[in-house]
Image (cartoon, rainbow, N blue to C red; front, side, top):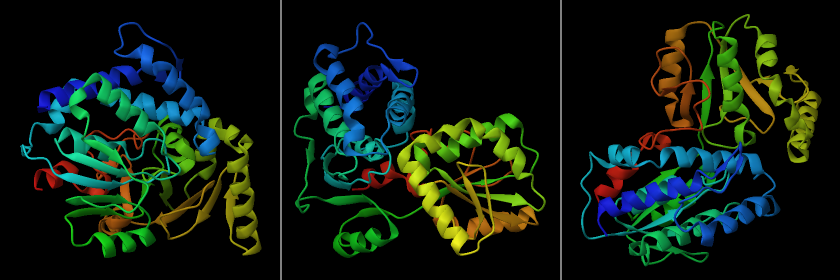
Length: 351
């Protein structure tokens, strides 16, 4: 199967996924293999929260909608145009996280689009959608048969590793897989650098960067940097549309627990009934909490962020800072915006 066929297959998958969006699930005409797969995907979306309480219908549909927009022939061709893949495939073991729906799909796509074989070890928190996508791909393009396998046991017989996990699991990965060509990812979070001059629309979009997927993604904004005397009331006003999150029991439990712990520790807090703001130097904040830190000089802050870039996935800002993204765009990276800044296709090309 050549590259053109692989691109065509993922383009077709994008068309299929376009039937599932936050505005609703709607069966369309002339979608390949709809009779076999539409109802199966719909059922899995409806049942997902049974397996993972954080996988709400809205969050799953956001993930599907986002990938349907990305998986276009022109995007895929632009993405792969600078690479030259070898004809002899390698087997790549991919250890996937499960913090948000389809979080391992970019690695899955990268391995397959490069012509390599994937041996996936999924998180128990997100193990139903990619096997279903695999069956769809194998149906529309039989050339994928034999290229994709899943393992729940010890990984064996592979040539390279891509593994995503926490800082703790990364040490485990490095110990066991260090002898193989590898990409090993650790904890990272997105941050926002605010000046106080942002528009109300910017701050509303920042709300999506903070709250989408309950803040569980590595691209979720977990911390903001603000100038002294920053108007937090204005921020609270513009993110108020997310107030209903507190009605979701798992989120409410985290909010109540973290607030109690902080108050018992006599930390100074700002909160609005569904989000806690805590001044903290750390980059990774718990659910329902957003850390903040004051800065005096923009250039000094740029230097700090550059020195601590291994903890940062991306930066939401209007300022001229490396690794910046627009407000509301953290969960919509382009295909060529790689996790941890490591070019996955370049790595696969070199195997």
